[in-house]
Image 1: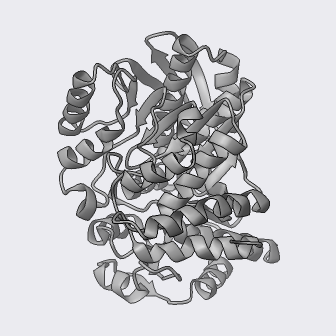
Image 2: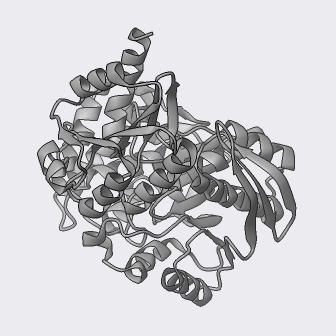
Length: 437
């Protein structure tokens, strides 16, 4: 058992050696031992390739504005591990994390001796979240973000009041499949009988899979572009402005605090969810709560302008679709500026296509690496690039220090790639920016 936060965290991270073991049997076994805390939780389930974290944030912010207590389970964390289990946007305390680890540890030991085998890191963290919101700190609603896929994801033992599928992209293809249809099949695994599904999926073949699954389960589908539509979009200096028409009402001039056209889609999913919670689940959410919630919502590392002078942007674009959204936003906002891009990524991504898109957008591109088990080396990334002005540096701290000093008035420094990378970078970057004032 654990007496300190460091001990608990070390044990949780030690489970990474087990890798990913898709399936729900270990989760169901642990929940049975804990008295099924997941059945005591009213929840919304959010899956998809991109936009899950932002959609969770928008919806949480709206619900908080309406006066509700909201739990969230998200991944990965950005600055501290505790962020993964948060209450009203505040990570749980170290003491709570230690207690939760002590609740799950004996179960993990016992499970290890069975034919099911020991639980993975993600299964342990998910079990901790269920225990926390089911038994330790009940709240009005918990927003559970899917870790990977959906059908066999550890979170998929819940029976939510709503399911949201944000988007479909060709990510984690070795696990989820190499076509939009195959990936959609896995994502659609979170759809439950009779439970409404909200989606921003665009590809016809992926959408057909989701609609077919929903039809078979008699689950109503609310699709972006049909039951709710975006219009009159324009970018602001910080954030986006757009109007939204839903089957229930029209919203003129909604404003988001997060930048990027794709954030209007994530925001619209949250608004549609709020509308359904209001109409069918007795959540008293008014238009003023929606407007205020969207405007103040903040999620780190999503086209985050961390400095205006020098101009520095952090963006966790970690797959091809994310890179496409980033490069489009850079051209729209900073088309007249020289773009210097720093990129680090995990080796199991489709790196060639991602780097090709960055090559086209960058005036200069620099590849680096970070301390993570699946991180690609800077040199390997460099070798995939065809940009005429490319470099690689193994020491990202040294690289950032140099680039910040050399950044011209008509340039923008964009730091992108894995969210694990950005979570390491941001504290150091803020410190460098402060010292350079």
